[in-house]
Length: 45
Figure: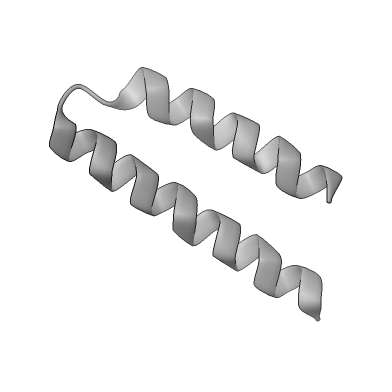
């Protein structure tokens, strides 16, 4: 759970600093979603 929280915090920070457009925000949010899903899947096994 701690790794997931750290990952989310890092992804949020990168998303906020990296997006310049609404399209960019959508891509960043999508990438965060994929990272969270991957981390959750890894935690199951």
